[in-house]
Image (cartoon, rainbow, N blue to C red; front, side):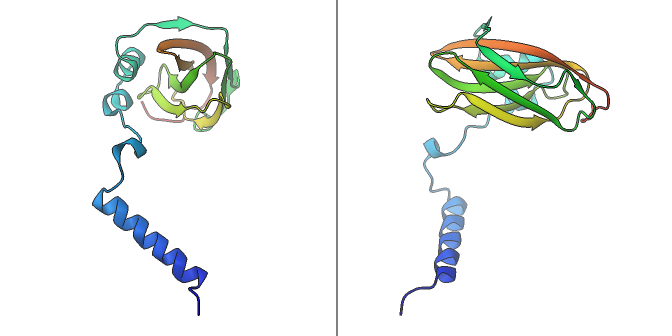
Length: 152
């Protein structure tokens, strides 16, 4: 008599729970959390904490797709695409949010597009920052918010 799918699934859940409880996973498999960048209260501090002292360069190879007017700042759809060769990550910042760093995505070679929904406190510039071959590129777009989505 073989093992049932239900027993097998329970076993996987228990094993996964034990691995995470005991902290057995190698650090390379766990995402790095940049506490200073996520808790920064202004755009410059968030970018400096996240990227260090590197300077950004404006790029027309980064395209932000966002509504020009968002009726509700609690749910603003944002898409970012990049045609910069060797792009490694895309990070989204909202300039006037209480915490400007919104999200960061690690890219695979074939896909340089990300989409998400973000919260915006008020009318602000949305920045898309791309890290490629050690250089930092940025583009921004203003989104007008009629009803704020996060406190501030």
